[in-house]
Amino acid sequence: MLHTLYAFATSPVGAWVAFALNAVGVAGFLAYGVGQGHLVWLYLRRGPRRDRATWSGIADASLPVVTVQLPLYNEHLVAATLIDACAALDWPADRLEIQVLDDSTDETVAIVDERASHWRARGIDVRVVRRAVRTGFKAGALAHGASIARGEFHALFDADFQPHRDFLRRTMPWFAAPRVGAVQARWGHLNRTQSWLTRAQAMVIDSFFLVEQEARDRAGLFIRFNGSAGIWRAATVADAGGWQADTLSEDYDLCLRAQLAGWQMVYTRDVVAPGELPPTMHDYKVQQTRWARGRGQVIRKLLPTLLRADLTPLVKAHAVFDMLNILTVPSLLLVGLASPWLALALAHQPSLRPWALALGIAQLPLNGVLVPYFVWQALRPYARGFTAIVREGILSVPPFFALMMGLNLLMLVSAARGLRGGDVAFQRTAKYRALDGGRSRRARVTARLSPETWGEGVLAGYFAVTIALDAALGTWLYAPFHVLLAAGFGAMFGSTLLR
Image 1 (cartoon, one colour):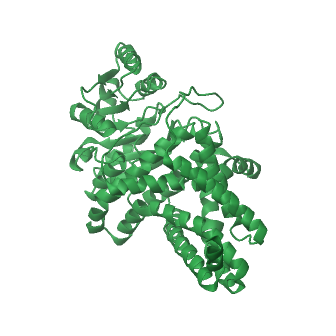
Image 2 (image 1 turned 180 degrees about the vertical axis):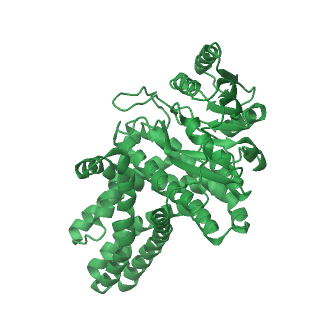
Image 3 (image 1 turned 90 degrees about the vertical axis):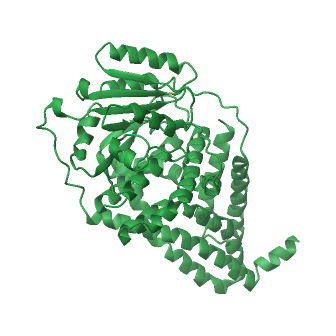
């Protein structure tokens, strides 16, 4: 059997089949590169928004009422910090309402009640809202809170965020434009340097906010509301159909419906709200599973509506591209799985080598220009000067690439489940009050390893063998790629085992 497979793999027909599989995969993420390249071009071509109005001359008594919504579920380590940070927001006390949407079943209940009582005694309107039945999870809590909120604007923070005091003063002026329905601030990080995992996550998030969100905002394209550190106009939420719990990406779902209804969303990179990055691989996987499955559910729910929408070609193309860019995941996996076959074929079919070289050259704009540009932009907030940037790059870039490679199986499976539909079960990401320079309190996880985790272990072994094959055959075209894949899947598998 093995002899037959080897004979086919090294035959001219088998070699071209291997090349074709790789070419299909490469075409998938080259399409992604074209879309991202156009975003970078828009980013460089257009300056930042200059249409923000100022409310500096408006008396405090004339400012709108803002309701700050804080959805919580068993967040005893961070609940007090979050409530205290929001109670300190610089906004007139009679114009500010803080809703603690508490669905907790543990000691968080007592903590929330104590902090709410503390701040009410000091003139801050902190209201604890509890539901008899926790239906709809976060989306249900937000919908319930919106139905009883007294503010015409709703600011939203997840449990692990700590907004700065001037957050409202710096974001609310955008709503002077009547068609602005939501404002999204940039996410910062409370524990970016805690570990290789948090550094890698920060690179992913920062490249998204500092390039993608910025470029879409500058060009007037659809942008994303990211679930936290943003403000909604209450009328926009109602007009778009409200918070809906039929997907795990209630934030992405609502922002698409709002923009399809004609509302404008604004992103401001100058306002940064720091939050906690998941410090353990288990918690990071919980988060990414939810996000990827939610993306699949949103595609199933809204892609037909988006394709039929009356939008300009550029806006529609980028909205569809943003929705479907998760499809690069199977493309990358296809190339990874088929490339050892291609390496073997190249060793026995030299005539194929120019074609394989051409395939590699086709990727240079993506791998040689676009990816380094995103990396450079993501590092700029943390380093000044060439030496500092190099140091940050050494500490952050290898973990970033390893994480991006190792995450592919989990994202593929999760997105596929979302596309398939079915029940929506929300699994929260645990919070630990993690900070740079300190240890976070972590609960020990005793859950059984998932099939995806065992799959990561198998793939780590597969690509380790592939590296040995590259060395034996002297075919180094894909060797760096195989090293990253082995490291990525190995890190995902090993870190989960050691949780």
